[in-house]
Length: 326
Image (cartoon, rainbow, N blue to C red; front, side):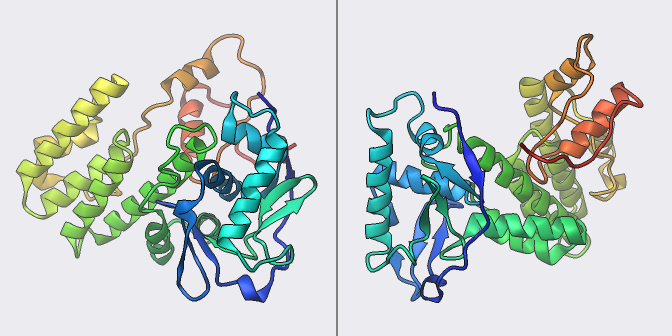
């Protein structure tokens, strides 16, 4: 397979005539023009849609033709993959910007590759990532930002390519920030709107059924609504999922709600229990582990939680910081 080669490039200056073009990849692919009219993105050939999706997923950096072809075709590369990519990019431009020109196309040719220029077309995935950066800067309790995140991230991206190697990390990234927003909002709603808290918690469980905090939130909301039988059913679902998929039992905090629903602590006050990544933790503590290991991942993907849990097993050896990427 071709090696994914990428170059960094910031957004260009753009063109005021194309500011209204909106591309959405969270959920089904759609493209809307400045007047609100739907453009025929769904009618593009499948490979053209994949080219557009990969460029949207990696909108913050130039994709070489080799990297782009590797994502789209994998090991089944066509004989002239560069020519095939040029054809599909041309199809995208003709269908979605029929009166466009090199000065206005949002798929820009750069350094022998292509870039999705978010100054020439808005992209919901780019907006979501910008909101996550704002949340990192302003703190995790900024509820309006969580509401905006949830408005964008209720549907995972690239449903046509759920198992593609290039799509999986983006879907995971969106899932993490969506679940985090759902649980924060569920916590905030518990006291005054328990039914909404319960709905949000169930959405979090559907997105990530292996995260115990989703069940915490749902059980606490059910108790607040005076429905202890529902809380017990939620606990049982959690127990079955954790046992069958991860081989672990629910935490003592969750069991406490099951045993004494009326005395259940408020969601958000329950101590988090680290679940999953057991294989990775074992690898980190076994003899022969390299002296320095960098843990990297998108914002909100659980790096800090993983390092905190790892620190319990290897005290004095864990540090958190930023490192440049080569």
